[in-house]
Length: 577
Image (cartoon, rainbow, N blue to C red; front, side, top):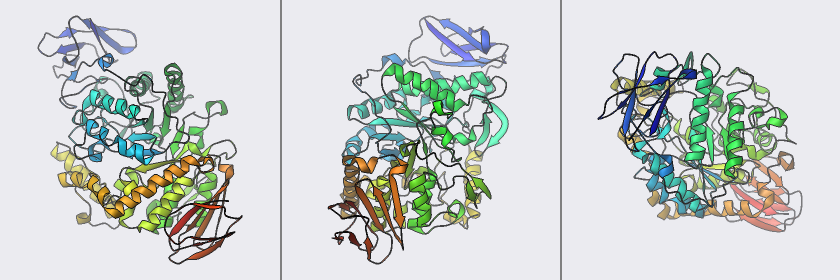
């Protein structure tokens, strides 16, 4: 006997359609739920729902499997049937870990979960602890960044579907790698979003991507449960080790208990039951430490949040760019504030927003590992007009200086796929919307967006052009080229050093001492010191103690003279004092 359920609180009638069989009338239950038990139905059966007197078959809002795409029927899927081999997996905690963000469709030439398994040894050798997958839930079309998802329970079929994702997670665990999954609960994608036809999942308000999700209006209990159950599904049924919650600032919630806090409570309960750590990481534009402050101290109790201020401080200092939201960043004073205080905008004036922004971090109480920092990520590359990586404009020597500062900061560091070898491939904005009107709207909107920043229409790649997608695939053959291989080996040694020295992964913001001068910076990390020369000329720098040993240098020619160090142009060194 198989039970079919669906939440449709405003419907007067709901029918279940089993393809190849007669329709079944469903019975109304409390809370707007409809149910029916059907004998003889097993995994692999296609089904859909019909609302009221309409004969249009709609996929299940909680569909686990959409093999025919988001517009096709749902298919019964049995989570218990997968042969997991990770019973001994005890998880990966976020503190002390190095993250690696990747997009399944462009990480390998094949663009599948199974193909990604073949690259896991590379990540193990690099020293990665947790891989973070860009969204993999089903969206319309073949390829997409993933933020247009409409089926919040079903992995994208062209990637390999439910079993494919489970095979990847199972294989990652076998190699000691945890898996973080990026999930989007702030909007539905523009094509194939049938859930709002069943219930009031959306409000009349809108954010950047569409109508906002109904978290606090009438019938919002069912909407919140829809999100919470999706979260628990990924963590429990797919064995993933954490979730990155996309743009939580675009999820308005006026309730006394915010959805994020509710999620933290439910995930903590599941973690206790499973006996392994589960992490919730927020992406937020608010610079509000309340998100990652423990619930006992009045916060939401999430485990970490992305820290764009750390990216902006590093990026502007290295590249000299000052356009748009980079305007307030770029000085050594700015980077010092970030390294010692977490945020740059912490109740300070933001010229980009034309208002004060952010809140200070409680440095003695809030550990830095709750802030995820990066020199590059999918947004900061892909939302540039041409999708150019920072390696396209920086010298290899400055790249090494940048990643050295990242890996020795008191935050949780994250790399973007290919960054470890300074991949030459861009990562551009690509879509494959089958609807001509939607495709044209996306392409024209992209051109208008960048016209305001001085980019001509011809400079902005067409998201719908298949070549835009193909250009964004990693070229793994580059690892065989000496310059790329040397960059990879440097990243590998740097990560290994970070893990071998407790001082370099110490998350206490109060334990970071930074001073700077004319285009140089010194960062004291316990018994270790990071010295960085950002100038195009050699510099001799006086140190706050005698050097016992040079642990790692980004280039040749570093000279140590007891309490002084001479650094060649665009060079950094990590020394033991």
